Length: 385
Image 1 (cartoon, one colour):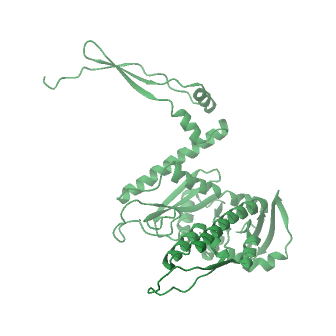
Image 2 (cartoon, helix red, strand yellow):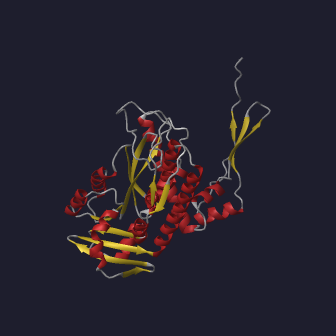
Image 3 (cartoon, helix red, strand yellow):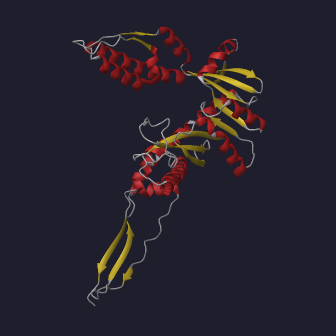
């Protein structure tokens, strides 16, 4: 099973000349649409181990990236039976058709619009319990299986997030209504508030006045807003519910849902690359250095995942960050002693591990090398000689 997703990383540098390299303006997952960026496509296993990555132009559309990766993986690892797990924005209908023709299996999310088209047919299907607090409805169609999933945990989480954002937006609009700013300022602040909450802003219906003439003595205006209850009912009906699509028609729906949840491993990989391993922002100007920067971050992530799995097996109570902070207290020192004949006695020494460090090293099965024997450095020759 392979998990496939994309992210972007932006540059704190001037944009390049047109078509100079892969730096482009595009949809920014970092909310930095003002900066040029590159897109990074990544494939990982369900355990989080990365298989390959690709650096793409910053304006690359998600839906155009899949065919090249399918060919690359099959060329490198053969046409083995594998399941591709992807988010809804990556494959197109044409891609899925080609995957079926070449015998590849897939499990993808589907846009909310497809759920609207299938709602009437799904309403006639009975619920089945896939796992505790997770129910599914199955809808076979042609060579595919649609799995409508309802997760109680996700319902609670999404409703809590929606209420929090809606409450903030409602309070912000009340403040603006009370302040009665000038017309241009009102539009700017309402736009900023809507951007802050994203799609939740569509639940509030605004009634804005016409722009007053610039010659008016006072350009302060007020506005009205109401809750769109019909849209809110639709949103509530779909919270915590997902429509998955797969050509694994004989698979257990609980297993398909578990497969789809594994996409969090790709999201975790992107989070580690951006936060722990500092892949963003990029300051390099030359394309070869940009590629090298991302390559070093990718290698660091490979080490990160390997260390994480070692900790999971031998020291499950520690995260990678906690373990590295413990080991970072050990230092390697060069101690020099001058001798009477002008030479130096050089000792390369590491500090003796403390109790918690010794315990961690023992759990991981790591043995420190013996302390290096001392060296004698030749006397320095004076420049005057």
